[in-house]
Length: 368
Ligand code: MRU
Image (cartoon, rainbow, N blue to C red; front, side):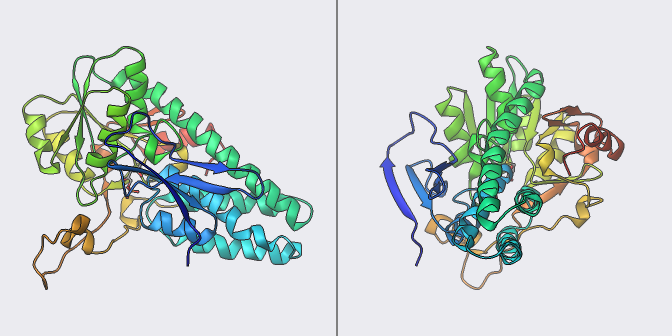
């Protein structure tokens, strides 16, 4: 039985964007997140007090988006080890490893999850002193990661805002916004910064089958910010480009291989192919923590397959006859050759090549 608590504030439409996630309290605190499965109709905060609560929230996409699940996992590791602080140092480090593995296995594609667990675990191993001292350092590191995520996303927005066409249209797929990060988002950060700078543009949000992150989340947060947004069926994106209504496509990413191939929400590859055909530049916006240079190309990126119920009976309504098979990969890989540039907190990688990616990392050796 989970000890997750919820507080509900149901509104027809949010007047203000709820915080994606935040730590409440101090050492005895807990992780509070907005339950994204209920948006946009219901804004309900969910309190995770155990690592099992955090695991369940990530698995069920109550919290989702690569950077957000990374920060959630960092806090999850703190929650899962808090009660073991009476163990001796070696036993405590083993407990961290075990809890970290449990969290890592929750969703396989977004590398930010494994990256965050690794970062907190490494810090723990390097911290001198007893288990309590190590745990305090872990919580401080999770807080630092949450702060950094907001800062990084802002920098991504500033690095890419000039790409937003004044008076034009921008297409995005899934949700790579504030709801997918601690603040601002990655792809949507460009739009927030451009909007602040007075640019006028229209965002087209693919609805993003089967879980509708674009329809439910991207439109929700852009509308709350006063940005002009139109939702379309995924299958309408190519026609929109053909009609000349889109001058830029920008999406987020869940994992970027050493050669620049980028995994993102299923359907992104189709959008990139259509963009190439129609000569619309296709950009990816992602922090350096989304790169996995241990993976040489997109072929080696693990792709999460989710329950066929998401297709068969999405949102509780049966749309596929009983006995018919469904295939439900949650992500696909867009090859680097279709990507005009990758917008990071260190600027735009353009053209997208392994050498150009290495150059960015050589300038910031602390990143993996
Ligand atoms: O399954 P989800 O909703 O976690 O998928 C999210 C995406 O594909 C996002 O585009 C990606 O994580 C980037 S979020 C800044």
